Image (tube, rainbow, N blue to C red; front, top):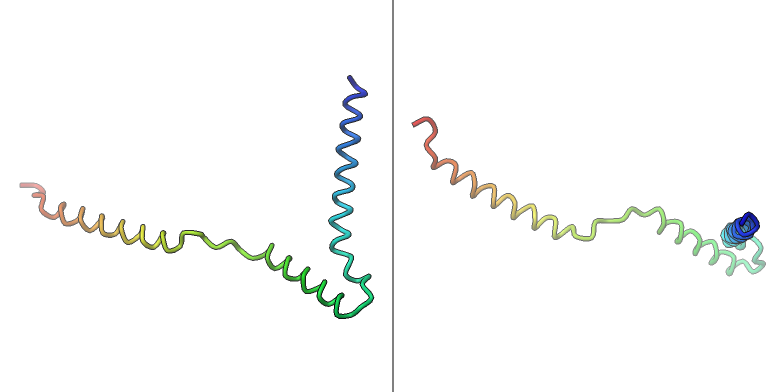
Length: 90
């Protein structure tokens, strides 16, 4: 049983090592491109990808949120109007 665990652990560690090496190679490959226009295009792609990762995610239902808020205010106003008709302390 120990040899099976070692095999799976070794396989998992090897896959992890390969994936991290490939990720770092993608980031580093632009400086080795000899042609300047291609190298600049590579840097631009990397910059765009990094900007997309850093960009905060906007709420999908912003218009829906505003509509929900308006509906809640209308409901609150209706409740307040009905409360005003109640005799307090009569």
